[in-house]
Image 1 (cartoon, rainbow, N blue to C red):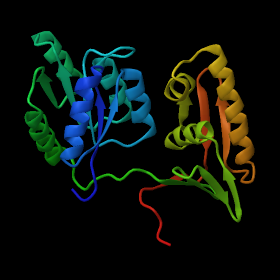
Image 2: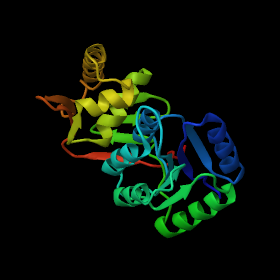
Image 3: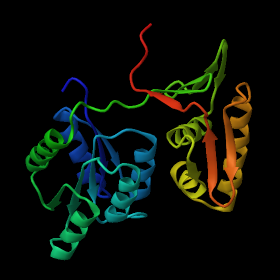
Image 4: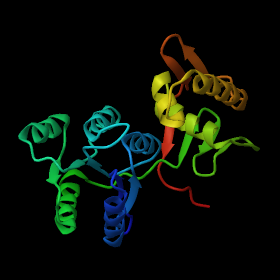
Length: 241
């Protein structure tokens, strides 16, 4: 594969997870391992994945719950469940959520890869590239470099500012739910993290003040809305020099 397909791998058994990650990497995939459902959800929201391979029994957030939340964000991404259970009820539950396939432990890693390849051939047309930049109003936001540029002026964002702006851009002109942002970036939606997020929203408003048409509004009782009257442009490949 010229462009490696990115796999979200969630497995709470660290030894098995590392073996799977190394095997998938050896097969040419960019496999990213997460040991619990919350970490996997956060990674999915903040990055691009071509497929999700999810263990059912995980701490913090089980595989079924994680799959439901992933489906709310992306209804098309393929999902394979891994489980030690062989109960029909669990298999049915997985497929009701929208699983593309289901493997019961122990399984052959070759079989997993064959099933992945079959699903990816069926599901993916031209490969979707990850977003690397957003154009919002007069601003250009370079995600990897965490740079917000307007004219000749550049602002270097902190990691938290950048992650929050990514979420706002992905929900541009729509409501970014406060709880979702907190759980994605801060993991926990407690009082102190909520106050911290308010501080970062204020900082982002200052960064965006040079274009009066771009603003972040509070939506009472729900969250925030990034207003970009002419819409937002997502750029999925590095611009040529």
